[in-house]
Length: 484
Image (cartoon, rainbow, N blue to C red; front, side, top):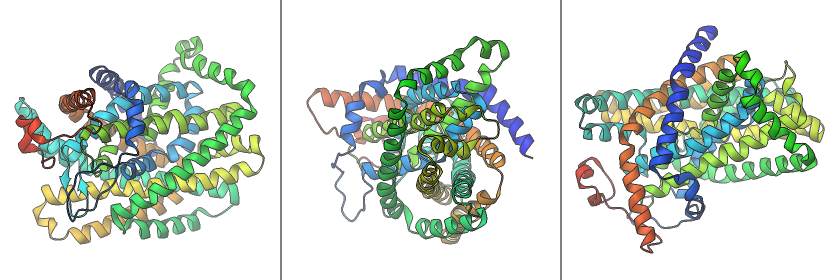
């Protein structure tokens, strides 16, 4: 089974998705006039933006909380174990392709999160939205008959895929990595660690998006800052070797031996897969939490989520890559995944290294578990509300079962499964999910471009806090539930 999944992954990633991700990223970068580079200052300013639409009796998730939840799912196993796997399998050159997919993918992240805000809907205690919503509401606006008809089944397909990918498959990867790190550092049994993770995760996921947002808003800054400081210390200790690290990365990415030996494709594929797993740009996950934020203009949350891609890949992933490459242990055959990261840190800061990584991955990956759960819940609610009137009367039972499987069963499965199996299964789910979302945002991206033009126009007029009203797009006003 594992070998079959691996072959399917090679076909999907090698012939379809890598090209689609790069083409979409470049197109969105051009059409937004390089938004990810030109508006970095605005992105940072918006993190502290306190302006919200005024609605009585409506609890709000702030821009920063929505950013923290999305970063919680981004900053996790992909940054510590995923980067290590990319280097071990694809070589140091894989790091370059991770950087590239982040630089162009941040424009994709902007587009999908802006669309998530535009087509969001009101829910009981917060807003709710994501690709399933903009596919269902946006595709019927197309002039092409086949796209108008595709809105219903494509939105349902996406909702099912993201629930399986994040709520189940990815949670098993996070659990597997935590258990591997704890076993390496302390010798603890994966079974007992898995049971402990399952218990705590269930307590939090039964608390809903507000509890998840509060936990993430505390954990994410602490763990990201702590890990970044450690990486800076390690780099400072080896500052004279840093030019050699960059040389190794670029030579391995474009070296003649890679081209002649046929290894360039494998390096690209590995780097882009692990980069996408880490930063999620184009995967369709971040728009689900971006839609929950209460902001005065959809572009605000699009910009904040673009910043999340930079935070994840260019900062946190690079920290891990530098630590591993400075250690020189990436050529050790028996080291892979989180064990390679732990061994690299041990070589730099003695026996405290594996312990620190174990604690860090516990915080990183656990925050991902609870964030991943929310993506599934939001899309199950979508399916119940829009595609299954028969089951809607049993929504409480269905959500309870999902919580038990996401925070419980699959966390335990991940603790006991092999590293290769959980990563291969995750790659397959990620490929199908990303393909579905890329089709949708390629069609609907024009609305994000118009929103960005409006935002820039208001800023040029001296309006520090741009506001959007759906009457500004009369041709799609009926498809937009909020912004009135």
